[in-house]
Image (cartoon, rainbow, N blue to C red; front, side, top):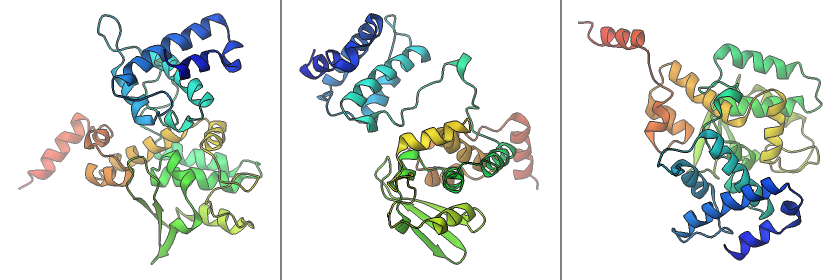
Length: 283
């Protein structure tokens, strides 16, 4: 056990937990540390790829994939450690299977009617930050941006040309520039929000204290409406797929490196496949 892990386990944050929780932290993090040490990674140099890879390969003693419940508990232990060690970015966008009996959100995103209902719900909210919240939700729905990409945006990242607003993200998960393209209708509430601002902060979205909004705050805002950033990213991809946008275009817009990630949104049923074949061979 490293000194870093020992310091964490003996920190006031952990010592006030129940004995069972402390044992779970020790067990989960000891196994995690054993794994990352094989790749010359230390606990004080974590990133989301390391955490995601570890969770993806987790297995039981008999070699079977670990259950979603086990992975969720392990992630909770790692997240607590990352909070203590000021490495929260390593666990912000981890994707693990949800526990079936508590999952209430569709795995492939909202349908168009649900998007309309959500936007009406936000529009009818009496929150003083309603314009900002509407702008955040619209941008996530219409861009497919990750929440980390959204909070990194500055006002200057938006350019207008011939009726199209181009929003460019420079701080992406894959370290590649990503762009979103919105017409005036889709950009409506983002424009209204920016016009309502009287501050000089360069960030596109700010908190009530005129500081760049945080990932945690965006998650809290969306949670009020029963959604999360990842659900809206799923919504972007799935609606494009349902409208028969080709997987290569979806992958480029969403920033997927692996086309297989995109293909899971585009699984036509038997009737749709029959229609495609019939249309293709209509000669």
